[in-house]
Length: 272
Ligand SMILES: *Cc1c(COP(=O)(O)O)cnc(C)c1O
Image (cartoon, rainbow, N blue to C red; front, side, top):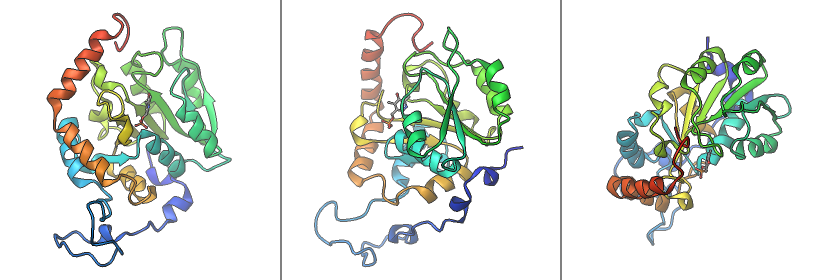
């Protein structure tokens, strides 16, 4: 059985989050005196801390309810938040499969968390026989699966991920930074079925918006609430919310550019 509260660090469970003026007010008034903002200028107001308008449009494109979406200042911020919510520094461990994205190790090092690495097999798949016994370790809190994997380009077998999801009592993070280039379905459709699943995507790659730092996490509302509790209150600036909104409302241009990139990519096993 998966019990979220048993996995979360005690100090995070006890934490009283910062409560901003924008959190507390949800009417339509244009008069705000309680956030000490300047009345002049274009960017004088603090941004919507929960990016509700942007999430509404993302929700339609991604087929995930708004309440199941968290936005980070890049998915790199989501990775770091997951460490800070679930991993006790100097005690806990996370699992990765190399070669893979370098930020998992950097975040582990910053948070003083031991990173256990099991190399992918010769066809870049997870060595389940080696991994399954490791999942019993109560100090293991997060497993990072990058699929399609950076740098190998292949997707991890669906059946192996399903076995990991149902055998592990900790959190399984599936990093789908390259999913838009892949014919595979996103794992986001399974977040209801698997309460320990966090799916990450980003606007940095196929969407061409690495400069605005917009990462997404799709997961159940229990984990979303903890992400909201720990994040800096205004991590996504209003210009960035605006740029993301207009980009995702122009799907045609996105599809066009994606096709150009795909047509220039290697033929063969990549992204299959
Ligand atoms: C590029 C990349 C990211 C970066 O995401 P940001 O949203 O730009 O922080 C995350 N994961 C993988 C595997 C990547 O290759």
